[in-house]
Image (cartoon, rainbow, N blue to C red; front, top):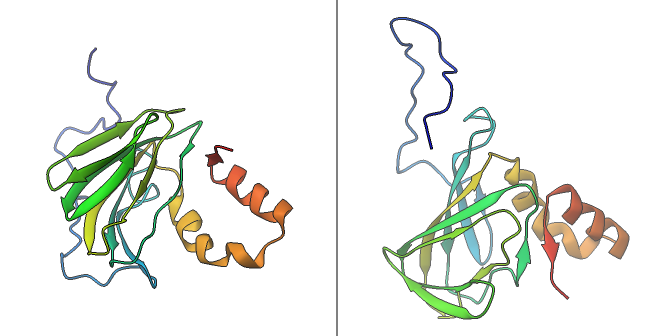
Length: 159
């Protein structure tokens, strides 16, 4: 494997780096989770999307599913997160890393009743914000609308 071809062709570099302060307000505070958009696909020119996913304690998280066009990576920051790795659910703890390539069956949830936190990264950087923001509204949609929403957001559930 080699480095990718250059995308920057200047001679002296550019002042384009940015910082998101750790005390910035989360973009999506919900009843069971709080999501902070650390670096969206739009901000990274489609290279990746990075999110902090904080479970507040009540059971939450998706059942087994897969994505056709994006990989997903998880890094556990605190607490216990149950991860489905295609065969079984396993407990992951602070410092554990979980990678799911395109097509890989996976799921994640907090079943502990205690807070937990993780970093969640998608590559390439798909517009996952619209997916996250649409989840609370799924109950208002018809079966056909829910199915179209999932396909639009590259999410395929197992039966």
